[in-house]
Length: 175
Image 1 (cartoon, one colour):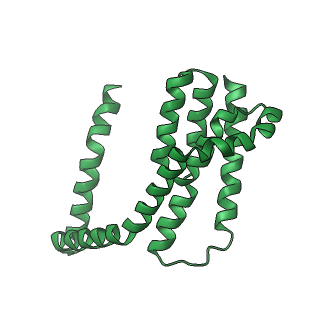
Image 2 (tube, rainbow, N blue to C red):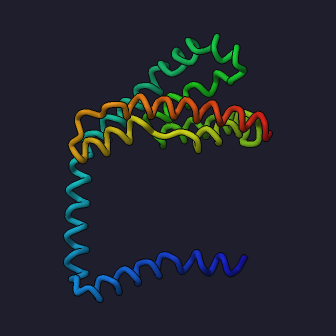
């Protein structure tokens, strides 16, 4: 175990050092390249800031308004039929938009049911089996100026649905 800790402590410095060494061996001006990359990074932050602000605002409005609870109640007949806990519907929906908001809901679930409960375990596995579709699409597609997303949204939503189903059955089988 000590060897693993030593390796994990050294891995980033080794990668940085080897990158600098490789750049120097190719005759690349490392400092100037680093500064150019930092400038582009700051430019990217300014480009995506409006999108991030809009997403954070919409997440806040959804949580505070109670709309997530209303939507969860609409899904209640389906969840009762399948045995899926309807209390996790807000987490499923919020995970599509924001990972940090979903983590906040996850913390609420842990506080209410406990992390070792079926609900806590299912919520944890769901967080690993799903993706922040709207955040990812808006951020990355906006950054590279893609306007026609074709089947990306449908494919991502279907993948998330199957991730939730897989998380539910995996949690039922394993716990």
